[in-house]
Image (cartoon, rainbow, N blue to C red; front, side, top):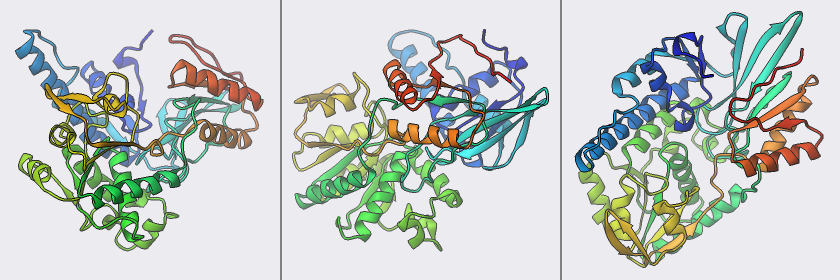
Length: 420
């Protein structure tokens, strides 16, 4: 049974993505008043992402009331977000901190997005110290900006994500090369590259990649416009946390004295206002436009698609997963006509898809992380697979079994205990 809010001692948050943090203000609205532990970067990202989620809910409620005469209360509002942020306590990686009587926790870099963490929980069972590792979302090795995942050690059991447990990603180097080719080809014909992208993580990764391609002479110096208020704020937070950048990355080393210039430089402009967005939309000549939302279901990218999808000089570049029934999926399927803001638009622009920019580890990455934990954990007994579609969980479970690791895919409501 779900716990009552006043019965919860503490919340330990892995990272700021909405599928992990998005209901925290609702928990606070229901009466939770305890601490919420997160890394400092996660706390900072939650401040803008939860505010954005509250704003979207308010707008959706207004729409339903106006168009359908239906009344729906948002799950939470900005006041709930403010109270939530007030409960958040920033804890650095590698620092043990108490979370409840007899329990302490540790954050390790999960390599997924800025501030993302795997969590180790430790307690005593009689004379024995036991540790449970919660993977959080595990990132890929070799991502731009973000450091590689750090596997926990000395754990007895693992709760592990399985998002891409049955998939193999293209190499990140191939994605960078293809991005350069797409930008250069589109610029040569005088077109724009329109990129629907998630505001946190993906946008900054694309900015980083374009900067590197320009420095290497692989693409021309053309304007890069970030047309998303949320992405603008997220980029500011990335710049405030340069201490978390991967120091092995060539571009990070090149700008060691001025790391902010990696993401904020003469190539990049940020469209804050509607007028600035319109200016980017009406500007002629080669340009890269990165705008939310990532699946082209809302946000300013829709205006760019409305005006740019019918121009054969342009390229619509898809850099993330597109769920079924979204506009992004219809673009990937190259439908001859797409509907934007109720208008039918002929899809004459080129469509390119890059699958190499996922921030999640694929099956090989997940197995490598799990094996590293096992090597460092002689008492490891079991792994529970969560956070994945059934097919992905089953594929990862089968792969783990081939490596001699015991795992299970628990159903909702199922419980299991650790053996001392």
